[in-house]
Length: 401
Image 1: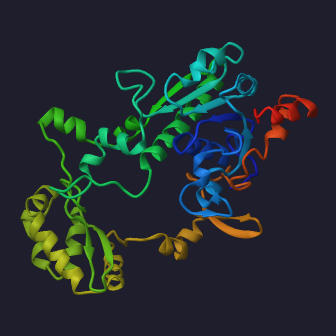
Image 2: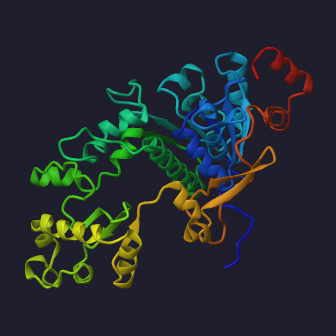
């Protein structure tokens, strides 16, 4: 099928209000797939992520990815004039994304009820730590804390050790994905409804992570089982683990299918385990997990990772290496699948990740990397709000923009 230049969200205008990661990641996804995302930032400083982690020429490399395809407009929302301009932008928008503490937007006169008076079709996405209501609604809700209360952190790490976190703000990103999904669902419903009205989407970081918890709740309610941390394994599925090879590198082996297990143990030098009726199904393998894992650990320790992976591939057993970013960038499959896009920053090339999912006919794309603070302010105020040049200069002189 022929790819077109059209994207699924062409013609959808989004006002992104908030900072750091959850809301901006949702906005990044929508912008990648065609939405016109107008990001409102504080004058001068902009979103704090502009200065986080690895900074080159005054701007973080992270921002170049997260801020892609967005129009940066600076407004001081602590001043009446700034809030008035924000309200005008919202009046002409399809979507608002905000991730302030619950109640802040209402205090500014920019809550859903305020905005729907003139714009009943508005889809209003709210992202917070604990949601817009309930006893915890006003608690500070950073991703690290919300990952903990969601139950996600409890099952990560090794038994007896402190729970661990991946070296990523996964709670924010997962919440952003939930927000983007909620927005697209609400836009679809709006299109199909006779009233053509929007709705509020309430995304909580802890609930986004709770949504990943698989069978934890029914297993507890139905059998009283509290799933624990299990290191590099997954409770109740055997074998699936990470093993250290002779050259010091690690491989992941997923040999938990019945026929897969038989092939795995044959190449690992344990034909007796491959044919052992006690290990013919997963329940039996769980009962003999230690024996199986030790056999596979010993096998990997005697061979380099490349040799292990080659044998696994020949036997059609799922297995793979543990990659770092250097490995990913060099990998031919990652490149063939288009997982990297190249942008230009001050005349220098920079790789940033593509945004998924991949669409066959109307794929997303990066039009420009994250731009300078306020680089689209004049354009948006002039073209969308029809302000005169003198008015824009007065706003700038007053510190509103």
